[in-house]
Image (tube, rainbow, N blue to C red; front, side, top):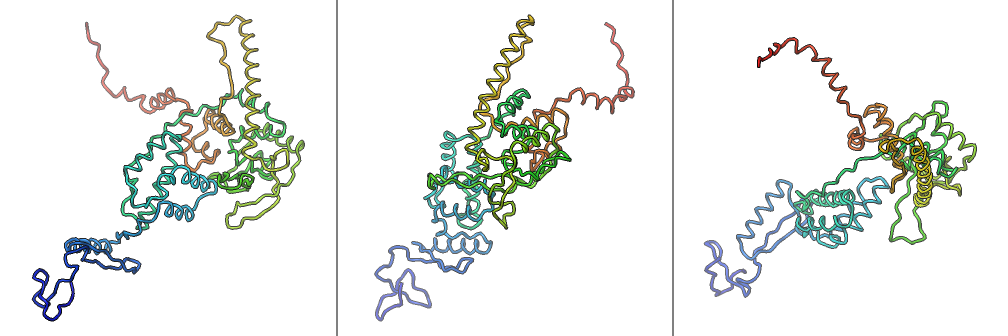
Amino acid sequence: MSRPRAGAEPCAQHSTKTQALVASSDHGKGKRWQVRWRDASGKQCKENFTKRSQADTRRSTIEADLARGLYVDPSAGKESFRAVAERWRSSAVHRDGTASRVERALRLHIYPTFGDRPIVSIRPSEVQAWLKDRSKAVAPSTLRTTYAYLVTVMHTAVRDRIIAINPCAGIKAPEVRRVEIVPLHPDAVRALVEAAPERYRAMILLAAASGLRQGEVFGLEVDCIDFLRREVVVRQQLVTPDKDVEADAAEMPESYLGEPKTHESYRTVPLVGSAVDALAAHLQRFPVVPVDIEDRTDPRKPRRRKAQLLFTSGRADVIKRASWAHVWGRMETKANEALALAHSRAHAAWVQRGRPEREEPAPVRVPEGASMHDLRHFYASALIKHRESVKTVQRRLGHSKPSITLDTYTHLWPDDEDTTRAAVEAVLGDVPALCPVAQPVSS
């Protein structure tokens, strides 16, 4: 529409009582109605519509959303999922180990499907299809963690007013079937200690006698052991970042001393005499050689220093996870060979004594796939077997919450049916005396 020219015929559809309008050459063509507004940041925005009724509806919606603080910029949703996710990843506060897992999960499992898509275009049905596809490739626990990262990125986009609705809302990851922990048999633990190279024998015994995590054991310094009080103090752990697949093959991530896993992981654990004696003998056999390493136990003040590590590799360096996996594998094989030999001898003695078949002792072995973490489970099972409380086990293991301890080890606590019956009997034992005695019924 334009101002009327001299002699032009007014438009019969759009002229008003106060103003005469004439049709232009574009009259009735294209999106002729425009809505203009400023968003919460003051940015000028506009949209064009074919009909005035559409423009009026959009204007009312925008005004209401701006007034309620729910306005979402339509152009913001065109940003790629990768850009939003990287902005979240770089700004989120993660421990170093978690940060590497987030990067790997995004790169390997989420970006190939959603990375280059405009984030506003991702639909709930596509998220559901992605979950189904990934469930065929990764374990349920890994998928659940990876999906949590996707949900968090989408939730961040909603909070930043990039999208209006989280497409993950109402979609749940597959349930993870919790596998009950089966602790190592004491004979298997003894066999592992005996099968360990001399340099690591005291370390294996310490892990089984304290329940420390692998990184906590690798990061122990000499002054963490109180030989007089027979205690070990956990104040740090050895962290080896995951290798970036995009990095140079010759470039390996450098290990460093970092904070323990949780706040509750800072703890003091009592030690048995045999473990303390083994550590003293270890220090005599393998004197401490200071290791130059970065110390990030105070994230605000990282520094390099000479660490008096209790356990080191044969090259007087920190113990790397990759090399330790080979050492553990050889230990496991050697321990199982010793256990099989012991069982065959026990079986021969059993046959010689003429015992009935049902009394033959079952063979003991270190299960396939076992790791140093199984020594932590063994320690927990020993505490539970000797009636330690949930709170005590939680503190010794450094769990952040008692619920984690219960979820992991609840099946190991003994069934106290007899104790329960006695407890109720002690409280209500005299109640039947207050009730009428049932009279015998004649036949």
